[in-house]
Structure formats: C-alpha cells, structure tokens
Image: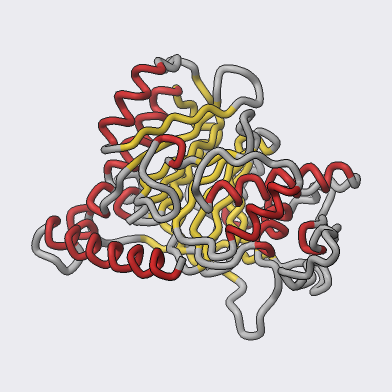
Amino acid sequence: MCGIFGYCNYLVEKSRGDIIDTLVEGLQRLEYRGYDSTGIAIDGDDLDETVIYKQIGKVSALKKEIEIQAPKRDVTYVSHCGIAHTRWATHGEPKQINCHPQRSDKHNEFVIVHNGIITNFRELKTLLSNKGYKFESDTDTECIAKLFLHLYNTNLKNGNELDFHELTKQVLLELEGSYGLLCRSVHYPNEVIATRKGSPLLVGVKSERKLKVDFVDVEFPDSEDAQPDVPLNNEKHNDPPKNLMPIATPESNLRRSQSRAFLSEDGAPNPIEFFVSSDVASVIKHTKKVLYLEDDDIAHIYDGELHIHRSRREIGASATRSIQTLEMELDQILKGPYKHFMKKGNLLNNQESTLHTNEKRKT
C-alpha cells in the first residue's frame, strides 16, 4: 500500500540532515504496508529550489541514493516543509521516473505525493499535452502536478494571485477518483497542502506551548458562487474546457485569516511542528496530538498555522475538526488487533493487491 508522510517545522531550527532523517524515518514507519519505491522532496541550496530524491526498492535504497547525491546536511532552516512517499505501482511500472514525488516540470515548480487512483487521468493528460505540457512518467500523479502549474500560470496571466488553498480548489474540480495528496511549491515557500478524498490523511501537531483550543475551525467560501461546479468534459471544437480556466474567488489576493488554535496568548509567533501522514504509525513517535482530515478537506499549513478549507458548506456538516490526544503506544498502533506485524502486513498487502488487480482490469 502507498504511504504519505510530510514534515513542517516553523520557528523550530532544524538542519537539512535532521529534516531528511525525519522524512526517511517516517517512511520506515510505513514499510509494513508494502511498497516498491520511495522518495522525498525538500528545499535545495538555491532560493526557490526544490530537490527530489527517489529510488526503486526499499527505504534503504533511498538512503543510499541520498548519500550518493550528498546534499549539505548542515544547512539549517528555521522554517521548512518536506514531503515523502512510499509507492506501490498502479499506473506505470516500478522505475525511478515513476517514483513519487512527481513534478510539474523540470524546475520542480509544483511537487506532489499521492495515494489513490485518478480515474480521468487519461483525459487530463490529453488536455494538458495539447496545451504543450511534456510528460516524463506513466503515472496519473504527474497530471495533478502539471494541472497545478497550468492553473497557476493561467491565473497569473489573468492577474489573479491566488492563495495556495484557492489554487488547490481549482485543481480538485478537475480530478475524478480517489486521492490523498501533499503538494509543495516554490511559489509558496514553507507551505504545504494536504487534501483527501477516499484516502486517509491525518495531521500531527507538536508544540511546546499549549494550544488555545483543541480544534481547528473549518473555513468555507464567503459565497456559494465562489467555486462553481463546472462539468468536466464540455470541450467543443477544440476549445479549452471551461473548468481549466481560472475562477476568480472572493478569497483571492492572499487575504488570510488566523486559526484560533495556534494563536499565542501574547500574540508572539508560536514555534510548532506538523507531521502529515496517511498512517498514525509514522506520527506517534513525534506527537500524540492528531487531527483527522475528512473527505474534501483542504489542509493548508503555513506560518505555524493549520487551516482547514472546503469548497462549499454542506447542510449539517461539522464546522470544526478536533485535535485528539492518542492514548495508544506505537507498538499497539502498529499491530492493531493483530498479534504480529507480519500478519497485519500480509493482510494489508493482500487487500492492496486485490485493489490494484481490479483497477488494472478496469483500465
């Protein structure tokens, strides 16, 4: 089964070596789920640079690849967001070019790790190819990264400077299928997006100061017209589909709110760390305070705060996401109801194999 892990530190100084070790260890905690390749994405040496390290095989092969590339481990970051992934191939055979993270272009402007299956990726790939985008992998995930870049550039061309979560809303309008994904971008430094639909994601919170409240408010658009639901396949006479055009929203131009949970008593910035994962096993070592995302939630982490956005307000939907305190220990979480790790791993592998086999038959 695929696994996602992300780590964000804000006003908590960490070396690049510390960050790499945290990401790699997070992947090691996901090894029991089964996988065929691994990868991470972090800041590079140059300003606005993302570097990707990935390799087929075990996490140990990724560690060896990173050692070969020899990044400067003593570079320090006061704030940083890194993402990581273990992949079990669905679209595209196990080879390095198909490993996650997947990128939007050769400059790594947008980088994605993704669990799940995008069922309309062939249509998206055709649309984006017709607009001049060159694909280098066989994955459905690369379509998501390129869609981020396309909509970012088109909005910019039209004078719309969107916040990261607003851009994400536009991307998600185009996706069909299931996903749990993390996205980082050179255009939104020290920020990360986490969103899910049919694939689990949670956020661990580690802070030396006590949070003001034990929940995060869900933020809805000011108007139901902010993100109209546009039909997907409405392309006629080779005109671009309407839903690949940027939509101006009331929250554009980077108007940001503050999240109550992360406001300090004295108004000073609060040093904090966030751990995003598809499995609590990779988070529990760092913190027992976790928030579980719901389908269609868009979690936006920046400036030491976690914001939860949704594209529309549903009747009866909860307006908060609780920050829970886990009572279980790591060993209990890893084993679950099973007596042995191997038994749990075999069951998960069999379930994932069945899922992948059925999906390949469909395609």
